[in-house]
Length: 208
Image 1 (cartoon, rainbow, N blue to C red):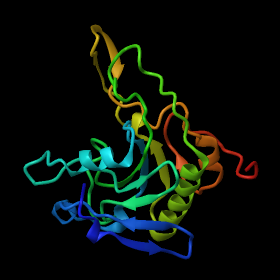
Image 2 (cartoon, rainbow, N blue to C red):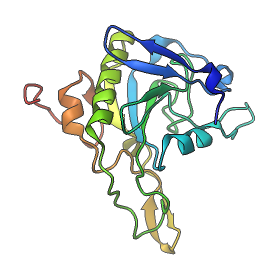
Image 3 (spheres, rainbow, N blue to C red):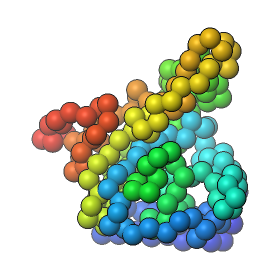
Image 4 (cartoon, rainbow, N blue to C red):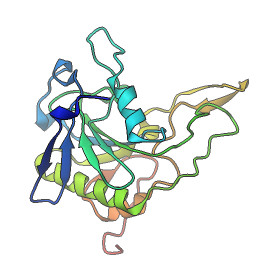
C-alpha cells in the first residue's frame, strides 16, 4: 500500500468528499490542460477490494516510471479517493487517455477468472452508497470542467477480444466494465452528461 501519511481530505460545496491519495508517480504522468477534458469513463476494478486495486495501481509498467490507474476510486460504501491529478493523463483506457477522466468502482466483476469462457457474467451489483457517491463526484467534475460533456463505459471504448484461458477456440472480451449490473438509468437521470456508448438513449430526467 501507499504512504497513508500523504492522505489528505477535501470537500466541496457540491457535497463531494475526496481522500487525496495520489500515486507516487502522479507528477511523472504527462501534463494536460483541463479544458481538453471532455470524456468521463466508468470502470470497475474487477478486484475484490480497494487494497488490491491500489496494489495494481502502484505497479510500474512503463519506462516513464508510471503504471495503470484511474483518476478516482469509489469503494462499495461510497468512500472516494483521488489517485491521479486531473491535469495528468492517466493510463486507464487505450486510445482515449488524453481527453478523459477514469473513475473506478470497486466491484469483483469476473474476478478471479477474468478470461474463462464460463465466467463472463458478473454477479455483484453496485450498492446504493457507491452509486450515490459516483453521482456526486460526476456532478462535481461537471462543475469544475467546462468542456466535460460525455460519459461512457470502459467496454465501449475497448472492444478487443482474446482467446479464453480455458479454450483458445473461444474468444472473450478483454473488458466488460462496468458490466450489465451497472445502473445506467439512475446515473444518467441524476447527471448532465451525455452517454455516447452502447447505453446511449434519451433518459427521462424527471423519473428519478
